[in-house]
Length: 332
Image 1: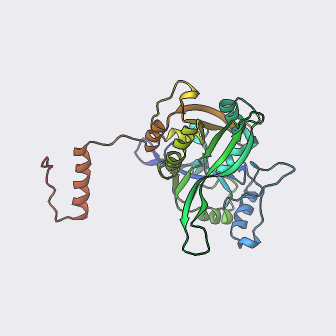
Image 2: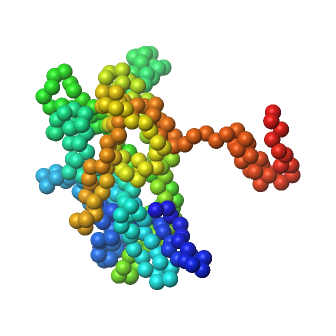
Image 3: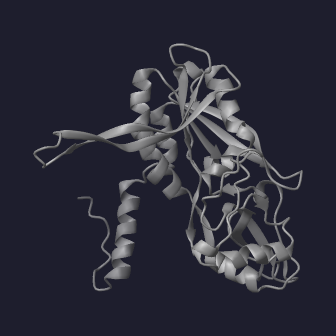
């Protein structure tokens, strides 16, 4: 569902939609009692050193509590809708209510992605998992006489490496996890509105924001793949990429390869099940592609024709420089 308005028969806006908090510190915002929402909003206004810390439920175990590192604690976004005639706020279900994952740690619920990837690419259900392995090194020329001529510094890491627990030599696959950035005003406005609200129902998001798939895909994920996958391919290794369904749906079309042995990248697309109240991570689909097809999908479109492009240039010229005559294309 796109953000915007649905009009009634008279042509007047009726249903307005905006993105707001989907999960807050691991809990469904819709399911949180109003007083708990206000309390979570209240602590966001405290000085950092006074702010209580919360465990991340997707990385923690009873024996090992790992603190949330996401500023504001928002794990995901979802759409909310406001009926302007009844002033009722609700959260759509089904396709329109799917989560947009904004924290990469959200994908780590119960270790599902690690098991799924290892079964698919390594042939084992319980891989050994290591995190943030240095992959790129940069040579630094030193000007000091008593220093080495070059020094190595990690400038690029792979999020995780999954290793088969018994095979020798090492049998492994690389993993990149990509959440979605959002554009628009910060969540601080929502926290303030929630803190001040005394409504018993849902509060419609006060600010307009939307998932920024362009920043998340072409600007962040694509360079990572272009840098890392060629080397992995030479080594005979695969790159697994975990994204959610909303992210994958925003990509352009990508041709699949027929077998895992022919792929460079295996896309593991997760979904969320809300039937139990809280959202639960679920296996979605697996797509096997080459690096080249993945880049096409991340680019997300085909170039327009030259005439159409130049028409758009002329329109912008006319708007910005009123004195410039809007001449037709001369063909030169």
